[in-house]
Length: 302
Image (tube, rainbow, N blue to C red; front, side, top):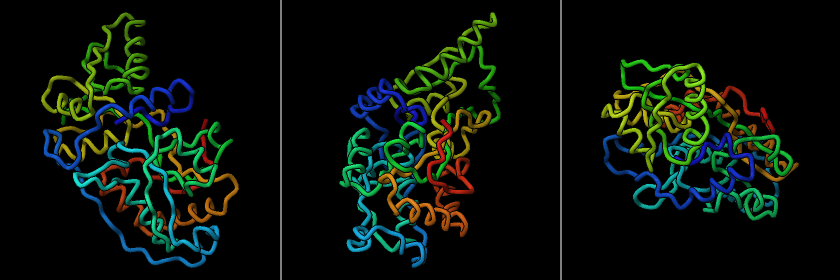
C-alpha cells in the first residue's frame, strides 16, 4: 500500500507519493500469514455498439485503449509472480473494454507523469486509483468508478472504536497518510481530552501491519479502505472491519478534457453497474464496500 490517494492533492504529498515508489511493495502471489493474493477474474460482456460509437476515432481505428498505470497498489493494480499487471482496477477496465469492443493496453508510468501524458495524447486514459479532485479536474476529466477512504480493522470479536482508541496499539504502514496524519490526529484528540495517547506502530509493508494484527501484537490497523478490505478477505476471517469507512472520495479514470472518451467510459461503467458485472468484480476482490451506484463525469467532492 502507498499513500492514500484520496489525499494526494498537494505538491508535498505528490513528492511523498513519488518517493514511495522506491519502497518495496507487498509480495505478489506468495504465501504469508496474511493469506494468498487473489487471482484475476473475468466476466463476459457483450459489446454495446451505441456506447462504442462515441469512442474517439483514434481508439476506434486501433481497437486499443492505451492506459497509463502505476504499480504496485494492492488490490487495485499490482504485479503477479509472472510480472503481469493484475488487480481490481485491471479486471474492471478489461470489462469496460469488452463493452466498448477495445482491448486495454497497460503501460507502466510514474504516477505523477500519467496526467501530463494524457494531456499530451500519449495515453488515452489513466488507471491508478486516481482521486477525482477539483484541482485535477482543471487538467483532465474524470470518470468515477469507486469510492475510497480510510478503514480500520480489528481481530475478530475484539471490538475497537476508531474514534475512541486512546491507549490502544494501532498498526500503520510507514509514510502513509494513516501514519502521518490520521492516527496522529486521533491520538492528539485523546491527549487533549486527558486520555492516553494512541500507540502508533509503524511497519515498512502493509503485510507486516496485517500480520501484527492477526498475531495480536497490536489492537487495530488503519489503512486505505480497499487495502483493508483486501486484507480482511485474505485473512480468512481472522480480522474484520472496525467501524465504517471515513474521509471518502471518488476514484476516477482521467481522460483528456472534453474528449468523447469520457462519456463512452462513463456509460460503459454504468452498463457494468446496471448489469451486475461491476458488483461481481468488486466482490471478487473484497472491495464491494466502495462500490458506487452511479458513474459520473467529474464527481469531485473537494
